[in-house]
Every structure is written in structure tokens, then in C-alpha cells.
Length: 311
Image (cartoon, rainbow, N blue to C red):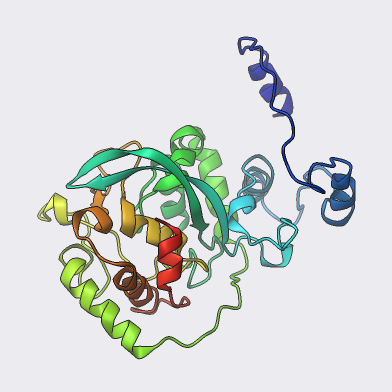
């Protein structure tokens, strides 16, 4: 694989470019300080197969841990920016651009691309992760960007379009097998949720979301008789909704959601509530809290301050 990457890079046309001078403040502009970081947090080594596991599992582990480095986004980090290996794959937060919004089923490029938080969900088979997903569900998601439970959006949609959709069927299946056989795990996110906040969120959900996602949170499956514009994935057991940080959920509500490469089986576009409905930060926070805490979902409350950070 390393040789294949090198061979591809050698085919690129040469470009003359002088990188800007290091403008990071002290002590981050001292590159030698990385030696200390590496000494504490980096363990060099090659991938080693687990002989007690199948070849398919080991292939999936290699693709997930090495080439895919999925834990880089899907794991929390400590104050030094290192992954908390004890909570690997239980969900993380990262910065990326928000480049467009959806209003009245139309994708509208934003005038100014903004960098905001995105939350990556738990990839383990926990109830707040991929516990309800089968290996077939994961394989379909990696290859197409959607399945019966979810659709890819934001940065993950780009990952699928430019990367995982190019996997062979066998490799996509190997990743799915590896993920489904992880030990269920999660982060300690206990806390009480104010009943008034839940009631306020239920009012917004009932008025704005039940046409597609249903009062039960089970969504509207794609069937021969269903209105295509009203089909929607289930919110019950949804990993994105239950991510430790609600950033991605807030982005969906503010800016809408769409798959970057839509197909006949894609979920329909969802308009951003900020543009089409005009909900304020308190209402959006209440809505996020309600869907993160209903139908068996278990995730901490969302605050208006967290919503404000995503504007």
C-alpha cells in the first residue's frame, strides 16, 4: 500500500510552492517540542494481524486502524490533542468547513465558508453507537453513503464520495465485520435533563419534524407507496443524534442535510431550519435535547450556547 501511494504521487504534475512561514505562537512554533509529544503519545510500529481472528476481520482491522485511521475523528482527545485510546471509537469532535445549506430542497453555497465543530458518532456496537446496524448496513453506508438507518452528510459525505465508495465490496465488508465485532463502549456522559426543556423540544418536534420522522421517531421508510419527499431515516437509535457532542446534529438543523452524490436510493434533502423556519437558539437547543433523549436515545442535553457556536 505504501508503494502504491508513492507510485500515485509520482504521477502528479510538479508544482512550485513556498509554504508560509510558521506563524504559530510559542511554544508551538518549536518543532523540537514534537519529540516530547511523540515520546509520550506515539508508539511506532506496523500493523500486526491477530492470528486468533479471521482473515476478513484482520483485513477490516488494517483498513480501519491503518489506512482509514477512522479513530482520528471517531475518538475523543485529551488536552494535548492525543487520542484517548481507552475510549477509542466512542465518538469525537473535529473542525471542518460548512460549505452550503439546504432551503426548499435546493442546495445553496454559502458566501463565506465557515469552520465549525462537527461531531463523529460512536462506531462501537453500543446502543448509542452502531448497535442497531448490521454488517450489511455498514457495508451499504460505506459504498453508497446511505442505508435504511442513515444518510451521510457534511465531511463524512465527502469521505464516502472520495474514499470509501471506491473500496472493493470485499474490503467494505471487511470493515463492517471488524466494526460489528468491536466491544460495545461509550463515554461517561451522565446528567439530568430539565423536564421543561424536554417539553419545549417536543413542541418543536411535533410541529416541524413529525411529518417525516413520525411521532415515534421511527422515520418513514422508502417504500413503493411512500411519498418520496416525506421519507426519512429513523431517529430512534440514531448514532449521530446520540454523539457525545451535539455539533453535527446542530449543523443539520441549522443548515440542512444532503448527500454529496445523490442516487435513486438516497434520502431526500432536508432544509435547514434556520433558513426555512427561523427557529431561535433556545428552540433548536430544546429540539436537540428532545431527540437526543427520546425513543430510547440517551445523550446529554444541548444548550443554546452550543447552538450559537455553530452559526
